[in-house]
Amino acid sequence: MSNNWLLAKGYINPSPYFYNTAQYYIMWCIIYICIKKTLYHSLIVHLPPSKRDNGLTRIYSSLQASILYSWSAIYLLDVIDYELWTYVIPISASFGLFDLCIITLNYNNYKSKYIGYLTHHTLLLFAPLMITETTSTLCAMCYLFEITVPFIDISWLLYNTGLNNTIFFKIFSTISVLIFFVFRVLNNCFLVYQTIYYQQLDIMIIGLIFLFLNVSWFYGLVKLFINSLN
Image (cartoon, rainbow, N blue to C red; front, side, top):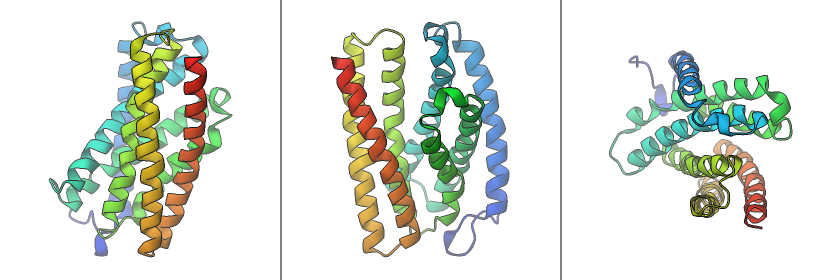
């Protein structure tokens, strides 16, 4: 990272931010190709043909999520400083851009949820430019949303490969619902409350958008969970 990575008050400098986002975008392209070559015949081929592109995206989305929530957790624990924490944000931004490209190219498979993905991934790309050192704790807590992703993705893969009657599916799907409620619904409500209390109105608007998305996705997740048990 260059010496001008951060501006006054801890704002992220847009120029190096988008430059690094572009670099990481190339990284996601390479990872996507590698995953497709190494796991397609051993894992993805067991999915229904209409689900295979979705299966590929879920593998690298879990990778991105693990990087992001782990890095944010150690920042919240004061293991790393603010500047070092911000270095990981272009990884998330580039993922949002890359994943949106994949989803758009396969629009017919995602059209019922496309607006939600478009909104979410656009925020991943541009919202970090609003982060300051003062609001960084709230934003790091927001990135803890990603803890839910690997559990949901594993449950999805088990369900769509015909393993929905196994104990592993029941365990992972139950954990998915519980941690989604804790980290994406309750945590999101707390963050919105904090932004209102501290009068961070710009962050509050983003928090409300995420809350709407998370509540909508939670409803769908619970509905799918109940149907899968039945």
